[in-house]
Image 1: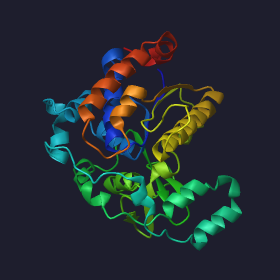
Image 2 (image 1 turned 90 degrees about the vertical axis):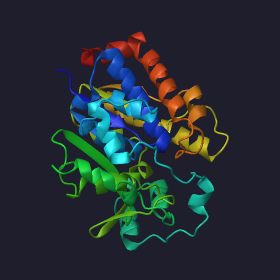
Image 3 (image 1 turned 135 degrees about the vertical axis):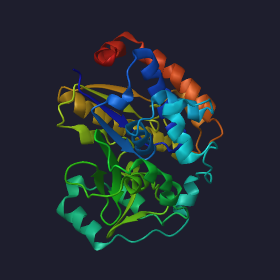
Length: 322
């Protein structure tokens, strides 16, 4: 049996729509159920998608809810959690993240930079120091308490966040990580620095796991998986960026490629789904926009199906097809 890991990257509201379209295409074309995957790694939007999959919601229902299509009994949990209307968020503007004075680095961050400089990421540190955003993501996701009555899912679900005091990645759900409620782990992973307020759990506060890596596929190194499927909504084209949003997409794509190479180097097959030009235009620069979700789901469904049908990709995915 093929041992498969599924990596669901960051990307805001439009990223969740991209996840839904890609996973529904793989489910439909390969007759493969993403809910059965051995391990899911979720970051930000991917943390929500991964939690819903582990809660029993099929990928096809995630897509149906995104385009406001009728849901089956398996998808009714989405209406229970989020209602029939799409959640509305303030527009995402890069300027809003940096216009307020940032915090100064504390002792823990300075100590980590001096003690383990090879593990220190200046960009991650800078993002954790941004002034807290005005919105409370933990409050917006409080409905996820409905799915944690039995604790964390039995099948492995890793949720990536960043501890604010020292910029260290924390993988909730992995052995050795703090034991926290699932809805707070997901909220921590979604707390975009400067846009949302950090999420406080115990003595620490956490921000979006995308501050460390938009995909965090590197967490799967050493798991001896046969195949890792990476869905990276933030990845962009290799051409020179025209603005800060293009630069962030280029940065995300480079990290995803680096993490995929590291997994391949240890003998793991990797398939990466990333949005093409058409889907990127629909996603735009406001990652929290619900304006084009229907089209994002539809176009990503078609593009992912075409990509999965390419001979070299089809061969890698053959082990999960039924």
